[in-house]
Length: 400
Ligand SMILES: C[S@@+](CC[C@H](N)C(=O)[O-])C[C@H]1O[C@@H](n2cnc3c(N)ncnc32)[C@H](O)[C@@H]1O
Image 1: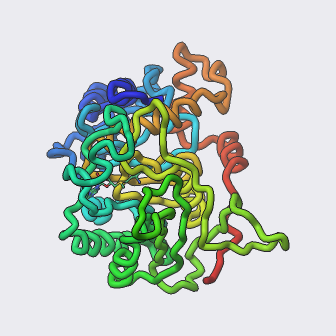
Image 2: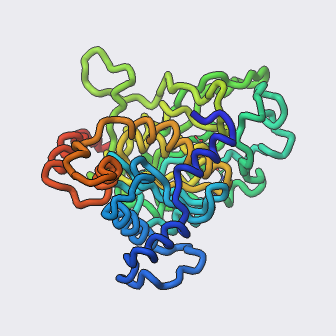
């Protein structure tokens, strides 16, 4: 578990390969000879080939019996562990899937996705003056231990908020596949603007969910705000057969037993992490996981362009979705990457291997066995095992 920034850095220093290391390995093993693999990649930005090179280098290591550092899930990074610019997850012991984090502004990230988004789920900054020294949370308002909060949160100037919202919602609308959905978590104050901007970008309103929030800030001259608004919009008509909705199974059901999903979600969990490092303004994992499960199918591609602590990334990891996320705060990208490894992927990697390492009969068999599950084409046995574990496809697509 991550209690300090030092834990974050330690995790990333042992949980990453830099591109330089990987390119060096590629050179040593001459696995980059094909596909123009020796071409220079200035700054690596937008280089689509780098993923393939990285995977090929690791496969080569595995074949050479030297894959010990990829016996557990790790990030391949552009940049350094202290200042990662782009991270690609190399997953041990699970279905291979795309999982990527980038240091990028929301509109840029959305414009440069490698594949269309099935769901864009995010919690943008609220533009309420946070970080200016005047916001309640900047002082000791929430009685927070500021040494336990990841620094660098970027807010948007209130006067620029409308233009900012139009910019990123436009990019989100263009990034969605037909029938794909945008779900935006805000305070009620910003929900109207987000809905108008998304409609202007051509999206169709689906629902606005009121999700109960613990510990509303006390007010006396107006009702205290005790819920988030989740504004859900879709690309194309509401009746699109490709639009996904699974009524949350963990919410109270009517006595008839028939699905009767409401736009009021109580009991969304808490985001605090007593004694641990946390991110300012994070969402509770329960709320995020419920939203991911309700509005996307397993294996679909979910995008969060305002990554923060990576709560959406963690929910996607736990529910078997692919994920791309970005933030302009380097501290957020670092924290999200380390949180995923130290608190989720690595504990899961301790589970028993799919097949016995000894059967491979080489000196570094355990590491090779772990790595092989990621990089070898699926064998008949492992394909059967993964097919058995896959969640069933959606049977429950509401039309309205
Ligand atoms: C409310 S937080 C997201 C919290 C996140 N959902 C979680 O659960 O931890 C908003 C994030 O947006 C980031 N941000 C602000 N402006 C941005 C921009 N233009 N592009 C991308 N990220 C931005 C902030 O640094 C902050 O991390």
